[in-house]
Length: 174
Image (tube, rainbow, N blue to C red):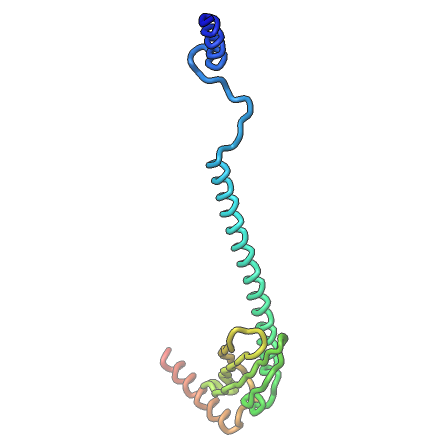
């Protein structure tokens, strides 16, 4: 009896362990717990990266839209300053209503350049209100040729000074 048991046990053992002592391949293979955890960690990391990229994209779209509105306001302001024939109206400044319940307040400082009829116009703008986080201030300098802004006596003085300087430079070259 014990010989029979031994032979059954030997057959059973032989069936589990083929020749050479190697284990047989498993019939159904499953993922281990570590493999599942690593896959979940990779998936979570990818979700975080994609979420951050999406948030950055939304912020970039908002910034571009805000710059576009600000740019159109500055274009309007340039047109207003460039097309104004009266110096006093430009120096007075003004207010402009913008989208999103914002206001653009601007003022201009005008200085004469050493060239006749040429003016240096420094425009300072302040944008406030609406959904903006804080008030914004910007300054831009324009060089404008405006004969109507010049005083006739001052213009002639600048022209004569310019001619004298030009003639002096011509003589120095000779």
